Length: 124
Image 1 (cartoon, rainbow, N blue to C red):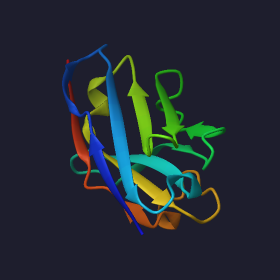
Image 2 (cartoon, helix red, strand yellow):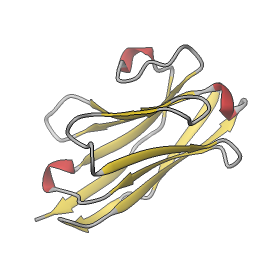
Image 3 (cartoon, rainbow, N blue to C red):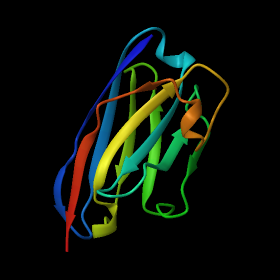
Image 4 (cartoon, helix red, strand yellow):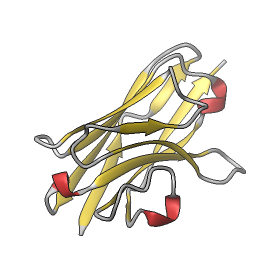
């Protein structure tokens, strides 16, 4: 089992940047494929990005391509979500997720472990 703790959220103006971190403890972090999801008020949780165990391959939702990047540092047991050119519609609670199973990409139901989330608020 792995425990996930997100950090780095906050309030930022439109056009600004934030970097979210998700720290993991427990079992070997390099065993896990990781994902980032978000949930805005009144909306369902949606996929943001994912990264493979090694960190060598990533995927991003169309809505964030060109603005967000995802990376994984197995030496630090941490996955990052760098968010640039933020828009008010990026406002949400951001969650990281993990699975030891095959790379699930944006398939939320295939992630086994979830963090508590961190709030990101983008003002216009």
